[in-house]
Image (tube, rainbow, N blue to C red):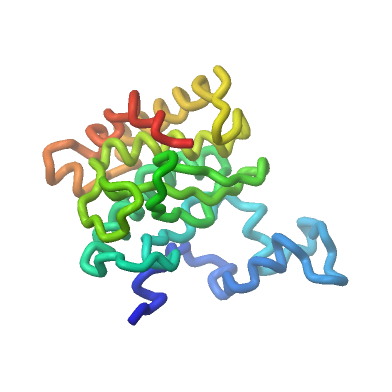
Length: 223
């Protein structure tokens, strides 16, 4: 039987005066109800509204493995591994998102036969991203995952779309210029110890440098 807590993983936030704010009220901030002010001034921001005035929440908020999307036939034993890959991707991109003031509300696993990744953003620094983790596209029963270096390359590609350069199927030169900067930032965060990936270290890959090394060609798998 499907249990929501098995699929959707909330991202822990640092303790602040917003700690009591409920994310179920996010629609009040994004799409104000009738009678609410469409724009809340800094002097009137309360609770969840302060989220949009700080870089503290510029990170990946939720990691959503495949069965949370209603796919049937998912190997339940593979769900923890899928969740772990999404959380590991979050580990690698959170410092970049904070540096740039970007937010990824949902990092989904998808299993379509199309691009390896898709980014849906609002041109204001907030996005949802989906990434194919499994080796066999379109087969939710597959419990073999793509190499992490390839997944990370796609993830860096997808967060670059938040910059607003290009569309999902259009990648002008400015997009690839921005992608090079994003990769450089990732390498810098690995080098200075901001990104510490225990799994990469256990495999002899250092803090994460080995994972990003696939960024040259794998990024093209994204949308």
